[in-house]
Length: 206
Image (tube, rainbow, N blue to C red; front, side, top):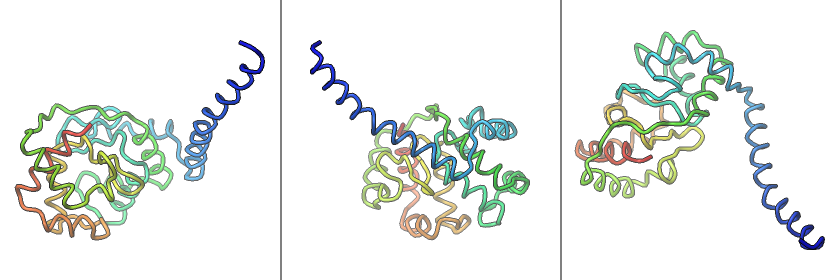
């Protein structure tokens, strides 16, 4: 390759790589600012496997998949359990024993894991109705496209059907309230069929 073309190619390559390097640095800087430590979280997550499975991939449908969940959401849920804004007989004593650093490290660890597909087989007709209902209620305004979540809004794509349905019912009944009112107001507009359909739709996303 002539010297001039080689230099031009190097400049183009540098321009293409620069955004990737910048994005990586931003992620690392954000983790450092939060004081998160993925490897420390890996060690601290050992007791979590009993319910949430290896690396947060729960095989028990009523225990949520934590792998790939947003770190901020996970941290805030642990804090809510500690401070009584969310309650569960299994989670309450575990969360109570965590320091702030423990919660940050656990959140970082589970967020960094790859979620695996579940064995759930969604009903195509119910999933189609669920997709229509999700569009009607503007779910992606908070949960984003493909329900991947953002910041304090959870990823629900590929979550267990049973867990999704239980949370929507709990928000609807007022059993769960740590949502700033958004999920409660939406859930109250849903029929039992809507909840079932949304469960099939969301559990089938991956």
